[in-house]
Image 1: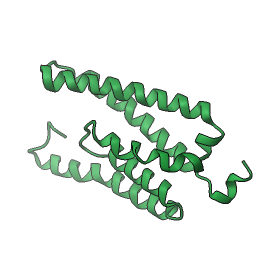
Image 2: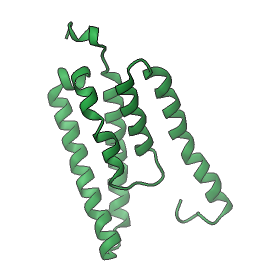
Image 3: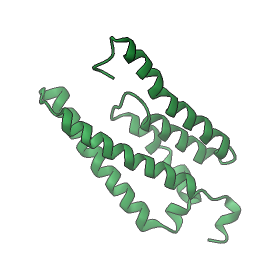
Length: 146
């Protein structure tokens, strides 16, 4: 997007990259509205993951909401090993992404390829996390059966 920003194609590309974000937020709202906490974290996570601009402080938006769903989500109740592995991978990629972006912005090192590779991996891990949290939602009544 940066390379095509001033072209006509750049404006179209900008709009096209917004559509998945808007559609997913809309669908998450429709399917998860009964559980406000899960809905809020999934919508926030989708917004940050599919955003055109990525900065480190955006991760705090959904990290701060995780404690609201932990007592009511199967991933944290019965699949603790899977949750720990996924969060470990997420944390590893987030730390290294921040390391590369810091060295690019503050030291002027040409790390665009490394940042792109970590962006792709980080994007995929975020998508898996969104899917896992949304698909493991349980109601308070269902907790008695777990």
